[in-house]
Length: 243
Figure 1 (cartoon, rainbow, N blue to C red):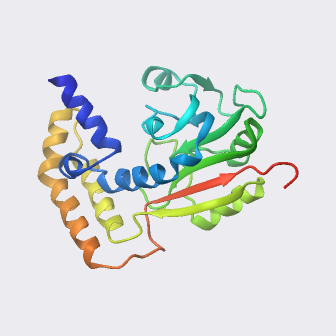
Figure 2: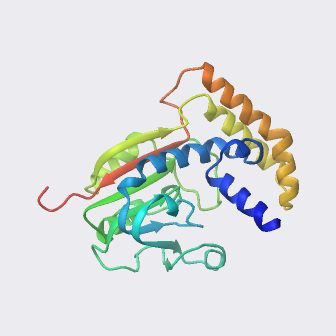
């Protein structure tokens, strides 16, 4: 029974549906990310590198021949992350032009050396290879003290093009009133979070689930606002030398 509940909670953490309305304090953020990643997943093929892979939550969405997870090398990451390789924060432990596609989900804001990081992505990605990135725009500080930046859609486009990438598609997640309700729940979560997961589920049900429901209802009534949103989603390609 406990194993079954863990599976439900994990699924609703990253692919929240109706149950997620009740138990996921980050319902809107995760719902938006899952939706956009799933829509663009068809571009992620072949040998794929997931940078900052965590638990590899979106692996099942991609039709890849090989899926490799990479994490920053630390005792905590070696214990808790589902990574196949670890790196020193500077050089990826792979040959040049090794991967057909790369995924970097909610990682770029934790990189203090963005030019070096994108240089490494370009190095290990094949010509005509695809990069799928998600990066928060409006969000609280998290994973402190390793939260270094927020990027606008224009900033991300500029820095990627500076490194030679061509933007195929650029999206904004939760660009409506739900961004406000998600921030409210993020605030409540940090006020009420406990070391006991069962208490967290109860407080989410009592205090944050109503916010989720009201947010979904208000989104039906009010128009979008593309200037205020939770996450950037960018699909880019590394052009061939002939391009």
